[in-house]
Every structure is written in C-alpha cells, then in structure tokens.
Amino acid sequence: MANEAHEPAPPTTWLARCRRVLAHAGTLRVRLTIAVAIVSGAGLSAGGALLVHAVEATVVRAIEDQSRDELHDVGVALASGVELANIHVMAPGHRLSFLRPDGSMIGSFDHPTPPLLPLVAPAPKEVWSLVEVPLVSPKEGPLRAVAVRPLHDVLRSTATLQRALEVGVPALVVLLTLAGWVLIGRALKPVRVMTQDAAGIADATARERLAAPPAGDELAELARTLNGMLDRLSDAMHRQREFVSDASHELRSPIAATRTQIEVALAHPDRVEAAAALRGVLAETTRLEGLVADLLALARLDERRPVGDEEIDLDDLVLEDAARARALTIDTRGVMAVKLRGDRKSLGQLVRNLLDNAARHARSRVVVSTHLAADAAVLRVDDDGPGIPEADRARVFERFTRLSSSRSRDHGGAGLGLALVRRVAEHHGGSARADRSPEGGARLEVRFPRDPREAA
Image 1 (spheres, rainbow, N blue to C red):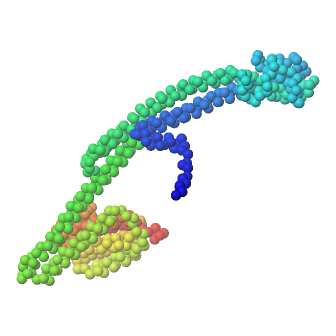
Image 2 (cartoon, rainbow, N blue to C red):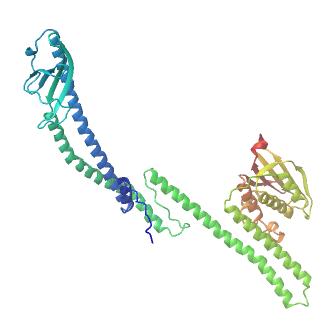
Image 3 (tube, rainbow, N blue to C red):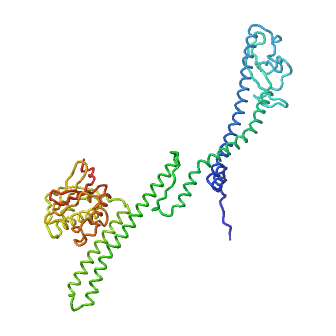
C-alpha cells in the first residue's frame, strides 16, 4: 500500500508562536505582562538600533560636508593660481589626492593615500570617509580631488552608545515589565471583586448586586450593565413565577369544575340529565381551551419573534369580528379604512379580545371605531358598562387581573384578554390604554404606528 503524501506544514512565524505562548500563559494578568515585555523589548531594541544608525549617519554626513567645503576651498585656491605643491592638507590624519581623468595620480598629501574605497568601507585596519569633487587647475587642467578622512572616532562613539544601550534596554524592559505587572494588577482588581460578587449571587432574584468601581471607567460601566441585566432577569423570573402560579390557579378551576360535574353525573345518574352534564362540561372545556390559547399566544409574544410585514386592513378585521354572533349588536358606523403592517393572526386576536371584553361588560351598547390620527392608526372600543376606575386603568392590562365582581370569571374572563391586547400592540410598536367612554362605561384604545406608505 502506497504511503499517502502529506503536504508540508506551513512554517510557523514568530508572531504565531507568540500568540500561542500568550494563549497558554495562564491568567490575563500574566498574558498582558508578557505582552508588555515583548512589545517594550522589541520597541526599545528597534529604537536603540535606529538611534545608533542615526547618530552614526549624522556624524558621517557632517564629516563629508566638511570635506566638501574644504575641497571647494582647494578648488578656489587652484583657480587663483596656487600650485599643487603649495596646497596644504586640511588636518592631521586627513589625506588629499589629485587624479587626472585617466586615473593617474598627480600628488598626494599628508602620507600615501590608501586604496580609494567606497564610503565607510572597511580598510584592513581603518574605516574611512571618502569624498570626491571635480576641480580645474590652470596648469594641469581637469582634475579629481579626493579627500579621505578616518572614522575611527565615529565608530568608537557609536560603539560606546551601543554598549550603553545593550545594558540600558534590558534594564528598561525589566522596569517596564514590573510596572506593567503592578498597574495591570491594580486595573484588574475590580474585575476580581466583581467575579467574587458574581460567584456569591446564586439567584438573580437575590438582592445582592455587583460592586461598581468608584472610578467612572469602562469597568464601572460594565458593572452597571451587569447589574441592569440582573435586575431585568430578576423581573423576568418574578413575572414568570407569578405567571406560572396564576396560570396554574386558572387552569385548576375549569378542570376542577369539569371533574365535579362528571363525578356528580356518575354518582347520581338518576338525578342529573346527561345532556345538562355534557353542556356544563362543554362550557368548562371551551373556557379551558380559550385560556390555553391565550397562554400560548402570550408565550409566543414573550419570545420577541420578529413581527410580520403583511399589509392588513384593520377595518376589515373589525367588521368581520363584529359580525360574529354575540349577546348584543356592535355599532360599527365609526369604522374607517385603516391599513397596518403586521401579523394578521395576532391582530385578529387583539380585535376579538377587545370586542369580547366590551360585550361581556356592556349593558346594552358597544361602539367600535377606527381612524387615522396624525402619527398613529387608532382603534377604539366603547361600552356602556360599569367602566374602569381611574386608579385601575393601567393595572387592567396586567395578566390575570380582575377588578370587581362585574369583571370576574363568572362572566367568562380569566384576566388574560387585555394583557394579550397590550402585548400584541407593543409587539407591533404600538400601545394600549383605558379611559372613560362617552357611552358611560370603559373606553379601550389601541394606537399603532401608521404605515409610512399610507402616510405619504
């Protein structure tokens, strides 16, 4: 069996190796300190190298500029008629040579000129700076003047600077690393405190919260954000527990009523008519079905799913539901054409709950109307019933809320209809409120944002 060919692994760069080291270096404080050491070491080393190079280049350039100035003075002297033999060398240790165009040397001053080498190229025992300038002598004609100057003083100075940096850079890196370790530890101390506080909070409903650092920095903002999240979780858990408790109670009532009627019918078959018992069971089953449907609808709305984007005629939904058989007739003369964008099913349930609620509590009259306001589409339902006390008009939209005997489960309500109305309205970006009706009873008003295309 032939061996499978394996592609060679890509070469690991030093940056990838540093990342792996930091990823397995333990705590965040250790990783940040290692990063400080690496960055400061690399930065200071590169800065030291650049400093040595810049100092050396600056000094060499100054020497070359000085040589050019002196060669320019030599050219002026030659042009004025000074003989080559009378040209004086610029300074001890400096060398000056004159060459013809064919490369032959006319003269050299100070001492024999070394081989003409490139700038700062090493000679066997010395490094030189070489500057060449074309000149014209009245006697010799065109010449090339070459000035060569030793750079041993420059190299000695840069070598001293480099040795100082070789000692100073590591020492400075160590100091920066220690300072980074201390400062990072202080900066992360609030995080350790918040971690300990969070470990001690067993339940979001507990009263304990994270201690926010006194400084108004990002960590303090993080603590406030986390505390806000805990508050929201606490509220959600509190509402969930209340919801489960209330739902259990509401579900128990029709189940218990159904069981009682069945047990009575079975225990006294000669006294209870089968048709009457079945009608009672059917009524409780219908009530239970409606309650479960409302609970499921509220649960779906609490999931905060995206709202639908279907174009809906709100007036059609109102007229269709108002035509359903009820104990009284609903006045729909105030219904005007109103378009919305949303979910048809949930909006239909909203309309049905509003009309059922009004019909349940009205004495003889229910009036429904729709119209367009400046910034909203408005749906109003008025009845001539007992109305809602002003102190309870906000509470009436809470779940499992029944305000009085006139609004009790004897009338078929479980306290979920108006809660569902508010959640559907909010899910579509709107709101619901209760007020006093001109008919003498309650007015329930729902406002939706207008369709931008209709507003235009």
